[in-house]
Length: 233
Image (cartoon, rainbow, N blue to C red; front, side):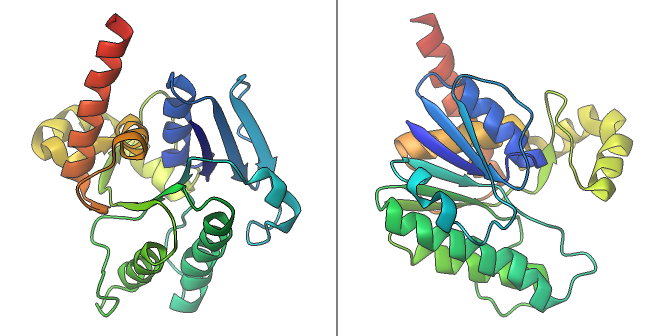
C-alpha cells in the first residue's frame, strides 16, 4: 500500500506518520507539507511546497497512491469565517480535487472534528466550515471518503502540538491523562488510535463515512488485534 500524508508535522499527522511507517503492509509513505518532518526512514519520501494550494509542480509525484490521510488544520480562534474558510475548505477541496483526478481509486481520509455541523447552518463558525468541507469531499470521485471526527486526543510517543496554545494546554493536562482515560473511556482517542484507524478503513472499509471518537477507538482496537495476530503468525 502506498499512502500520502498531508500535515505530517502536526500533532495528529505525526501520529499517523508513525503508524504508517510501522505498518508492514505500507510500502511507501509520501508526506506533503511546508516543511520536512526531520525523520529518516527507508519507506519515507517527502515533498516540500511553499504553497500547498499549488500542486502543479509535483503532480507527477502524486499518482499511484492507495490512500491520502489529510491531517492539515488550523485553530479557528481569532479568525474570521472568510479566512478560516480559505485555509480549511478552499485548501482542502483544492488538493482533494487534484488527487481525485490523479487517483480515482484512492481512499481519502479527512481529519475533521467532533461537533462538525453537516447541515452547514449552525451557529458555530468552525463547525459550519468543517461540515461544508466534509460534504464537498463526499461528492468527489474517490473510491471512498472517511471523515474522522476526534474530540479529546491524547498524544503518545513524545508527539507534541506545534500550536503553542495547544502545546501548553497538553503540558498542563499531562498529570490528568490517567484520570481522563477513566472518565472519558472510548470517547478519548490517542494519536496512535487515529493512525491505526486510518490504515484499517483503507484496507477493510467502515460501515459509515463519518466516524466519531467511539468509532475510531473501536476500529483502532480491532486493527491493533489484527496486527498482534499477524506478528504472532
